Image (cartoon, rainbow, N blue to C red):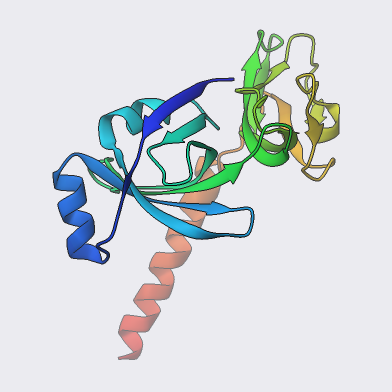
Length: 207
């Protein structure tokens, strides 16, 4: 698991205007909370934070706090919907040895069977793990899965030290027959279109 040290500064101004000024200075507004403590409002260096968040569930050592360095996990990351830059981050305090529930990405490895098509319905899965030993992902080998086979959450081979926190019957992957189209038949689409046109024509004549 990746652990990144990052320097925080206390934040005393709040509101949209203050947040904009913080971001213009190359920093990201953040809130550090957990363990029954009062939330700490801080700002973090934007470039360093952006690089750190490229790793899922990265463990951050927050330095520069009044009570000394703290360990934290990113819990809510807000980005600008158009430009993608970081707008705000919520951080959860954790301790070494503490168990936490996190979402891990499910990465597929291996080749699908000839004539098969992959339908991945869950791209991440909730697991419980020690806060400083969170794996980056769960690998699912699809080699050997026959057409019409399914993999549920309970079938996943989780990394050592993790246990399943999600519903064990959640569908992760299904192997479908690639020759069977799931798209509407052209004739059916045409019939539906004609029906719609007919309905519109009736509506016009009634006016």
